[in-house]
Length: 289
Image (spheres, rainbow, N blue to C red):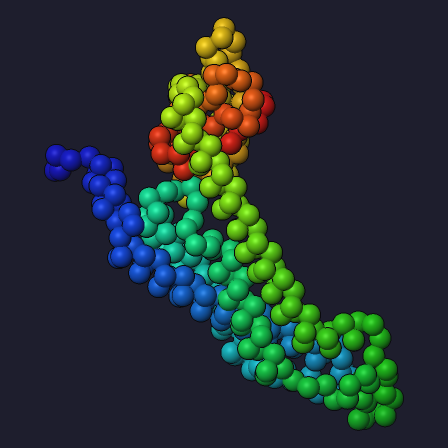
């Protein structure tokens, strides 16, 4: 029997890991493992697309053999999927230990890593794709009834370029969105720090919150808070956030909320901490309820 609350032990361990070289190394290692797993997944996706491509552009009497063996692409998909799930779970856990934050990732998020890995895997797979019997024509070696490709045939043929290009675009959009989100978060953290120093900090009541989903590790949710503005008015605001299921607040609980007492109705200068932490980075922007 322990005389220490296991939650306190875990919290202390996480505090020691915050900003540590061990947490950083583990984060980078799991990011690399996830990248490799996503590349394996991308290779499998490319292999299946190659098979579909060959069936579409060649005659039924021509060659339907893809360039990537069935056994290889059939193994790459499940191995890549399981590898992505396991590695990104570990990446997220160590990333949060390194930052000491549970609501956002340092560096890049799992989605960007997976998209980049899939892009790399597809690009590698294109080197093994089967060449058509003839470009522009479905050659019939049996009855010599050759057919010119229709639009679908050309679309599948040019998949050599647009398939990896599509995932490269998604990767770029993910990274751009990540950069914009980080700038937005830094701006909000700066405003929250300013208001924590010069504004008013109150306990806001949670008036609306969804019930925790027991089979999920994290939840995207909308919370509604009510607070007294010190001028005789009660105000309601909402926020959207992503929280571990264990930290989803219940209705009736309170969370720290900071606002500008000179303009309590200005939602651009109201921030709430869904986790209850008082660090400026834990506060998120709100909107009118």
